[in-house]
Length: 208
Image (cartoon, rainbow, N blue to C red):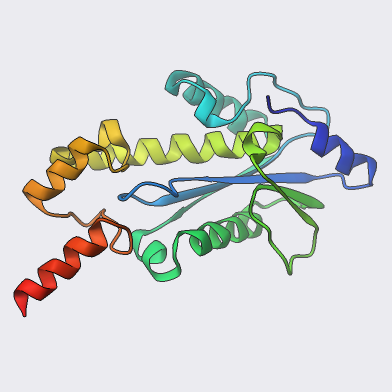
């Protein structure tokens, strides 16, 4: 369960404002990547905040509003399909975290991330494996990122209902893959991801 142990340890070392960052959308074959960062007051503890994957959609949405209200500052950045295909998903995640820290509009003394090492910043960064299940601040960022991305995918579902984005959130489910076979790809599909990459390659060969 996410708690404040890592944040408190950094506080003891003299770091006052701790930012946590995480992303949503590294695995799907469609839709953007969303990255968030959060800074809480040092005495803030909310036992309901946990890894977004462990929470129901309803609880995530409730906590989304709580986090935005009670955080000292937060930043949510959306990385486009073009950026994902240009950088690769790992680098897009890294760029998103850097962007969050740059735009959060609050002093950062140290940062915690979900398994993303970052260097060259004016403050130390600790990359925690499964950080969204360990650190309350990283978990809060995971909730902001997940809810924002889910809201976007629900809107995209209205534009492209045939792909069932409202249920699969861009992941390559059987129904989603069958829809791609039937309808082809749409502008939301990641060209650098399989099976989209192979489908495009086959189409190019057919067109030659």
